[in-house]
Structure formats: structure tokens, C-alpha cells
Length: 618
Ligand code: AHR
Image: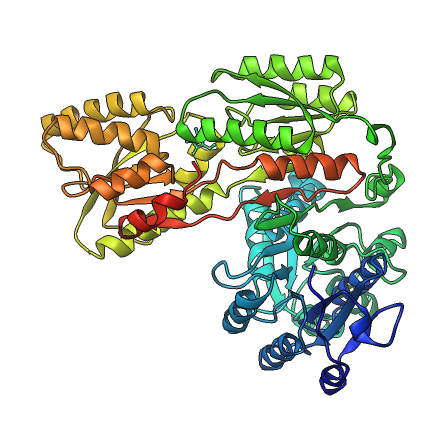
């Protein structure tokens, strides 16, 4: 670790609030982290800084320097520049505005590691993003309110934070997803109160002057929920249920408001301050297996969940694993693709390097084999179970068995379709929806046409997370371009050989019906390569007559791009081994894991293939 170079004079000039324990001389610290906070008017952000301070106190050689941008993007740009000039080793930043802050954060990332907290920037110019999954927060709130209102339904008044900010958009989206299909629930109005208690109180007071009652007020944070509650109380409006978000544990926070009956419920929204310091130190120590994005777990807080002790589980005892070899049971999907082989290799190598005993079972593409393997792991009392679910549904019974046996489960690569998120400790892997979107965005930009475009889609395994999500992402982008039409969509099960057979059948069928195919979107490279063979056999020039975009970015895809038969591949990294072993070790050491970890990925068009191929690891 290099020495922090924060000069005392620069510190004074910055007038930043430092946090250190041992010495007033910044040169005495080995590492200096700069924290650029968006504002300190929101209690949630004050807590974030407090968490950073408290966690940092555990590292004697670490000094943390804070800057408050007072909600001004211009000021935050200046703060970041000053922190950089002062010689910090790593920047933690919670941006006021994603767009305005992107250039300066890019600048910072070119010099030092950058950890983004809570709000992201445009693009991928940062080391790690940590934050809540705001869509899930909104969705859980919607599900809770739908359950509360039951069959008779009711009217909901929504109070949101600052217009256009990502958490507002995401929470709103999740909330609507959860209640849109529930009959008799209506959002009667949406008030914008900028995350502030007083503004919420004023706005809700004014709203009540001209509106009839509501059944539920859902505010996107607890401070605004409290403001709304004060307005209702002042005006003698009774019978309203208040629901907030944040669930801070301090005496004026959401948990206390639930206990006092002000809020019926809140949803914890971890600030990530603690995790930011932990991972910042891991990054500075150059630990391997750091993901690109981390989403923290959110949980429902009501008087019932508090009584059941579900909100803040007791810290785990790392005890019995220390000093002995950790045993990890891993149930793999099978051997369907180059991706999967690389994934298996990455897990085996990382386990060996980490000194973890790996009990590896190949599920041979069958869910029942994976379930049997997990049951064997439970019987064998392994320390941790990890698996990559072949399909999304049907896992609940075996996950409950693992939970009952007290064995943590880590999902790698693929998700399960199960509401109870306490059945696994984390899910690590790619964002498949985003991969689908990226494929479609590339396509639309590449073709740049308003003429009709006929697309054939080769889907992955039916019912698997990547097949479901890539389709969703791809169609989401194409919905904005009605000239693009998917004319055939068939599963090739992620196998190269099946991709070839299925494509041949489709081409024969299209020929018979006199239809034209302009584009192939294959959910993985292997199926695309199989389809390329089928096209060539039928006298079609892949890459020219038909534009082909696929997912994974395996070495063979780069070779096909160099040959001119494939046009673009969207990366989906199988190299999850190091990340998995780090998670296993962290968990066994008593650390909490984020609910979701997302890997870093890129889009590779044919133009870069020759240059990139030598760097590919799979
Ligand atoms: O789950 C990841 C997918 O599974 C890969 O994209 C595909 O090639 C693999 O078999």
C-alpha cells in the first residue's frame, strides 16, 4: 500500500472535516480515503457518514476526509477535484447527480480506485458501486401495502424524493410493479417532497385542504413519512396507515417510529457506509474477487418482525470454521457451453488457491441432479452450499432444507424465482437483463435504420434466468424501435450443436414461407457459432447477409468476429471463482454479504476483436 500524500496545508485549504484517531498529522496515516457526500441534510446521509467513521475507526492506519456538497453538483465537482489534488488513495463518492458528476468521477477513476455509494454515474468509470436495490425496495413496499389493504383495496398517496433522482425512479417503478396488477388499489396522487420532512409536512397539509381521505401514505423515506404523519395529526385526519423507507436504527429513525406506532412499516435501506470502508480496504489491499456492483439487503420492519428478531440478525459466530479447512459443496448446471466449462475451471482453480475443499457435482443439465447434490451436501454438513440453478423455479423445498440445516446457500451466475430472499445469502453473477439491452442497443445503433428488420432469436435453456432475462432486456429496447420484429424465437438450450440444428430448421421454414432474416440474436456465443455453420451450409453469408449478435464473449466468438461471421458479442463473465471463494471466506469469518453482486462486463463489436482476442481468458 502506498503512503497517503495528504498535505496538512491542503487539508486546511479544503476546510474538510477529517476523521482520524491517532494523530493530527495526516502524514502519519498510511492510507487516506476521501469521502464526497451529496448532502448532510438527509438523516440517511448523516448515518452513512457516521457508519464510514465508525468502520474506519477499526483501521489504525486509515484517515478519512469528508466533504459535503450541500446538494450542489458544481460544488461536488470542486470537492472531488480538491480531494484528488490533496492526494487521497481512494475516493468514496455519493453523487448529487449522475450525469453532472460523471466526467469528474471518470477523472478520479483514471488516477485512483473509486467506490460509488447509493447513486451511480453514467457508464462504468468506477471500481465498485454499493447501494440498495431501489426497485426491490419499492416492490417490497408495494407488496406489503397490497397485503395490508387486502381484497377491499384502497387509496394510496405517494410521496417521493427529489424528482428524477435514480432512487425515486427505481422505487416508483418497483412500487408500481407490485401494485399494478392488484385490483382496487389506486395511487390517488404523487407529491414530490425532495426527501425532506418539512417539505412533506407542508405539501401534505396543502394536499389535505382539497382532497378527501386516503388509506395509506407511502413515502419513499421515513423523514417524509413522518412529515406526512405530522400533517395528518395536525388536521385530525385519522385512520391512515403510514409506510416509509430507510429503517435507521437511531432514536429518531424509522425503527423507532415503527415502535411508537407512527409508521406501520418501514423498509431498511442500508447506507452502505460500513461496506464502503470494508471493500475500500480490500481494494487497496488488491484483494481479488471484488465485483463491479453490490446491492445490499433490504428488510421489512414492523412490530411483528421486530418481535420476531428478523430485522437485525445477531452477528454470526465465525468460531468453528477458524483454523480448519472450509468445505464448499458446488452443484454445477452441466457442460452446455464454453462459458460453463470456463466457469467450472474458474471455481476449481479458485478453490484450490483459496485452500477451500470443493465438493463439485456436475448436474448434467438436470435440475433433479442438482437437487440431489444439494441434499447430499446437507447430509454431509458442508460449511457452504453454492449452485448455479439450471432453471429458475422449483427450488423452494431444497432451499428450506438447507436453511433448516443452518447451511448458507450462495447462488452463482443464475437466480431462482423465489420471493423469500432469506433462503440464500447472496447471488453473484451478471445482469442478464442488461446484457439483452446491450445486445439490442448495439444492434439498433449498428443498423441505424427505420426500414423493417426481421430478427431470429435463439434462446437459452427454457425457464433459465439468462434466457428469461436476456429476452426481457432485448425486447425492452426494441419496444422503442417498432421496425425491429422478432419473427422466430426458439430455444437452442445454450448448446452449439442444438443452435446449429434449430437454425437450420428455421432457415428451411423461412425459405418455405418466403420470409427474410436480417438479424440473429443468440443468447450465447455457442449457439451463434452453431447457427453460423447452418447458415454457411445453406449459402447464406453470416455476418454480412445476416447480422449476428450474441452473448458471453468466449474466445471462439472473437475468432468468428475476426473471420467476419459474427458482428458483436456482449460479455458475460464466467470467471466467478475468486469472487465466490472471497464470499465463502467472508461469510465464514462472520461478515454480512450483499444480497446481490454483479460482475463487470463490456460489449465487443467486431472492430475490436483482433486487438482484444489475445487478452481473453476464456
Ligand atoms: O448462465 C450463463 C449462461 O449459461 C451463459 O451465457 C451460457 O453460455 C451458459 O451456458
